[in-house]
Image (cartoon, rainbow, N blue to C red):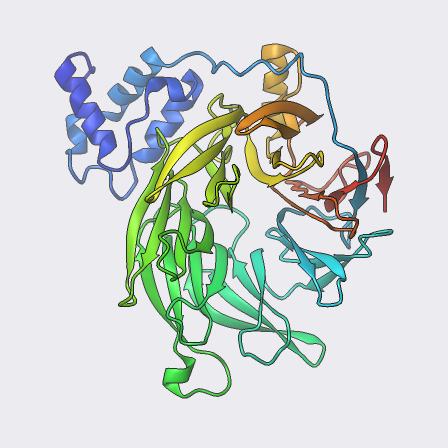
Length: 489
């Protein structure tokens, strides 16, 4: 039956809202709605409130098609010239360099002696690589290939022996699917070798892990962002029970569920409510599109509280950074929504946003810049004027980038920096144009000159062509004087 009357439309909205916020027809272009609606029908929650047979799928699709725009209107960035901060470009190739890779994390480590190195995770090949000699001619080597699909890692001394080990999130598969191949792994340093110890397995796709002592008992527990996909995924706590169990060899953990919903893409630890107990902050994507905190209570429980929810379920959250952006002493959230895994159309509402902490766990949103496909943003004082600027990268398929050319005769920005010109005011600069191939980035003083540098991970979906200009595994933009110079190793 056709959806014609107000009561029919009310029923349609109720059907959609049983699982998520209602998505207005203008959130997707006309050619995307049939796929979007038919993807929702087999979902677990579909029909749990409204009997699905009361509205036929074809009628729902027709209703959206009648109201959706032919194409989404992008912000005009054509006239903006490329403008770079004073950084020089160095491309560091992986080993082997002729295989496709997908760098999902870059992390800066500084030793007690001051030596700096970058660690990278490759969620396609599983490689964990180390980049050294950052103050000269950077070199890369594979540290470990034992974790099948390492997505993120963090340094850890889990057994308290003084050696630096790594806690690794194993996403289990490069392709998005529901399975139990994910795990939380510990790469233990042993006799100058790395030993893989699986701390928790038979999980969905594990996107992130963070260690913290939630109960102040002297050992490290683990927060887990189990993204999963459609029927799998949770936010988990792995409580360290090694001392209680009396074990003296491998650590033992008990699994607790903080949130049963799927879609957690990132997790961070901070005391947001000021009770001197570490809280868990998780960004949920998929249809939830919300930022949650799980407040650590004195009795050991966690109280969930929504900090912010996007206006519709195709918002596309991709990551966040906890940082005091305006210098008022409160942790704000620098957040990006630019996930393009669900469809190739560039979205005008993809953006870099600042969630300003105004106190009492309330956050006021500010859109800093529209940027289709934005996948990661970090704040750093790129121009050395004493305030925080923002660098951001995109992950945009080549076909989608060409779509922008047809619309506005210009490739979309792939790498940008937002210069803070006044408190909370930012000026948009295009750093690089083209198909965005940057799943992640990080900032920091890599070469020890006291100035911020930028490292970009490159994601290649296929084997690079012989004339491929982005064979590099990681691109380093190092602080220096004059115009940036490109050097390939």
